[in-house]
Image (cartoon, rainbow, N blue to C red):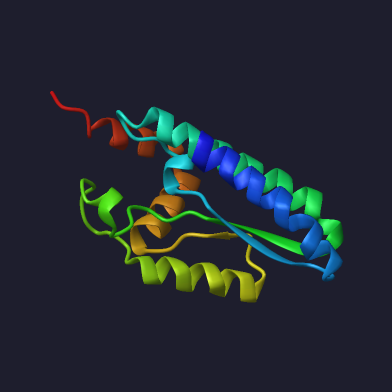
Length: 141
């Protein structure tokens, strides 16, 4: 929570007045698909990312009048050290950055970098319980 939630909160609060003074702008918050569907044995991490998603939605509403776009970036596993234990496919970090910047340019509030995140988002919209049951298959035994 210290880094994921409170760090994001502090950054949003620090930059909001500057963006307002400049007539608006954009904030892109790194969330994660685990904000929408948690993984076994990663409950605390997923909960912190769910808090970031909720914060992002609140800050988006709070800053709308000052013309500040607030983007939620929800990738799946990223091909970095932290994600090495996750199964492939992983999204390259450059793709995450590119998609986040493209979302800012195009005024998109949520972006799902990588095929894994896009497919998972579609599945969650169609049948969230089926996704939850599938995720449970990751448990040993």
